[in-house]
Every structure is written in structure tokens, then in C-alpha cells.
Image (tube, rainbow, N blue to C red; front, side, top):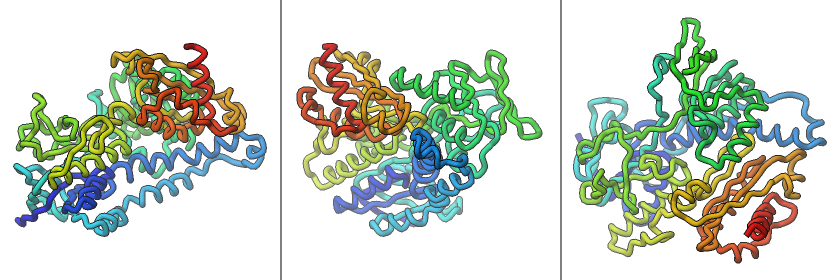
Length: 484
């Protein structure tokens, strides 16, 4: 057993952990990072990058087919093999050598194995070099940051586990396209993978108890649902699985509560996430293994009574704290908490005021998300329902994207819609949603307007270039003025 001392120890070498370590180093402290799987984490190998690579070819093909001149140049369908090969490249062929080189070049010390909290500011790395009884004990002078992320949740459906279901990982890394794919869950993963695998030639059936994209504005969800139907996806919204069985031939039989049976070659479970905390040694700091880690405004871990755990040396960033289960928000948290730990270690001022340097205010007020379904969905800030439930005096306005000149030029038969939610007391936007082809590029303008709390009177002076899809901002402002 060896012992090594660092200023900060990070458990988890995904994008969140990497960014924490990077900020620690930039602040002049030392950092070690512990990883049990691939350096680069879920986003690099089983989520953001490979899934968007699966979706991109189909999106480009749809865009070309929406233009009469380009349509004439298309002579065939997607080459699924080529799509999967390109996906492999964006997942680095599941080899983390490049990410390891980056860590080493940045000056971060990497320890491979399962990180477990052993006591105050102590992390035991178990299974070093894949040897279970080899343990390296690390000591942190200032902080331990948990950035272990989350995994797919497998609901307690009879027979599901025995049926060897796909999770988001298998869907993102599959090397063949099943002829028939059943999906349980109508959230982001379910709808994106339904979009991708339908385009790749699979016959897709999607079952969702909570409907399709239940957390976005209802009109945006309807656009996606209609598009899925049109593309051939068999939808069973508001339906509940009763049992699953994979027979001797490998065929999967999914039975719904209403008696409907769905037959497929593979079944994908996309029914939420669960925190990767079961093997972290949380019991050594008075917490329950397997639970989400609750944090205060500075991302210090707190217990059920909202008391700081261990006197304040334990932090959590990214999915594991359940604030915003999105890679870019995890990285946002990482930058904030890394700088905050440095400030506390050096005795300099900490700024946790709203929108302050060490605050993570955007997690509450300006969460940004793009759903790469067909059509795409952009959501920033609060929905109308969430804003109303928060007690804000709000009014929402909507406008068809079809009527915007830039959208009409973008594609024949462009079909989309956008809305903004306005806090009338402060005259600022608190929510923005758009659905339509390629609306992802609207996300940053919305994020700036909301995070910057730009008054509507000033937004009139942010003149959108003509003819672009961004002209929707002018149309929304005009609609709000007319209706007011």
C-alpha cells in the first residue's frame, strides 16, 4: 500500500472531472484524478459524441431532400455501415489514449481503479492495474470532488434484466442495426435513438408511460411526435410495460399492461438515470451508497439535514448532484467549483452571489438543451409551466417559424415554431423554446438573453440579420408587443 498527497483529488475522469482538475491546475494547485473506466467518460464514448455522429448523416440527408436542386443529386439511402464507421471515429474507437495524453500534458496525475472515500480527505484507489487487492491511498490537502456521473436506470419490469436490454451505451456503440428495435422511454435518449435507428433502417417501436419529451413545451413535443409517426415509428405514448421476455431464438417480446405485445430483435431502455455512487464509500462520511449527492450553492455535499458533510472538504459536480444532467452544465459546474476550491485554499474572496464567478446560477435559471430529434428542439431556461409553478408573473408568446423568411429559404416546407416566456415584473425573458430543422443554432442567443437578463426594451436593438432563422426573435418581440 502506497500513499500520495495532492491538493485536490477528483473521482471520475469524464469531461466534468477533467475540467475540475484543469481549473485546479490553472489555480496553481496540484490535482489527481481517479478513473475506473475510460478517461473521457460517458460523453466521449457512449453519449454526446457518438450519438450525435449517429444522427448527423440522416439530418444532412433530410436537409438535402428539402431542397429541390439538391434532391435531384441524391440517388440512394444512408449507408449504415459508413455511418457506424464515422461514429466509431468520434468515439476514438473506445480507446482513451488521446485523453490520457491530454491529462498527462496538463500535469494531472491519473490513477486507474475504483475510487472510494476512505475517511476525511482520503480516497482509496481499489483495483489498480486491474488487480483487485491492490490499493493506493490518496490524501487531499484541500478537497475531494466526486464527478462520477450517472448510468442508465433499469426499471423493475418483470423479465427485463434477463432479456439483456440495451441501455444508452449499447445503442451508442452497436456495430449492427437491428431489424426491429423496441424502446422503453420517450425522453431525450428515447426520441434521439428512435430518430437515429429509424433513419438507419430499423423498424422502431417506442413505448413511454410519460409521453414524448414530457419536460419541454407541449407544442414542441407534438412536433417531434408527429415527425416520429411520419417516419414510421410505432408510438405507444401513455403506455406501461408489463413484462419482457427474450426467447431461445433471441427475439424479444414486450407485453404492455393493455395486453399489446411488441416483438423486436433488441430492446433499449431509456427510462432515466441513476447516480454512480454505489461503490464510492459514502458510508464512511455518513451517506447512503447509491444515492444522488445533494449539494449547497458552492457544490459542497450536504446531508438530508442540509448540513455540510465532513466539514466541507467533499464536493460533487456534474450528473451525480442531479442539478442539470447535461454534459455542458457539468463542465460549467466544474469550472466554477474548481476556481472556488482554489479561492478557498488560497484565502481569496469567494463570490457566490447570483451570476457571481463561483456561482452556478445558470443551473437554476438558464439551463440550455438541444434535443437532436427530427425536428430539433431547443430549450433554454423555464417552460411556461415551470415559471408559473415558481410563482413568476409570466406571459408566453409563440410564433410559427414557417413564416420567417430565413426558415423558408433554409428548406422547402419548413415547419417549426418558437416561443418565449416573459417575466412581466422585470420585463425579461426567462424561457425560450424552438422546434424545427436546425434550430440548435438559436440556443446561444437565447442563453445570452436569459443569463444576461436583457430587458425586452434592449432586445429590440439586437437586430437579427435578414434573411436568417434568427429573425424569429423580432417576430416574437412584435407578437409580445401586440398582445400586450
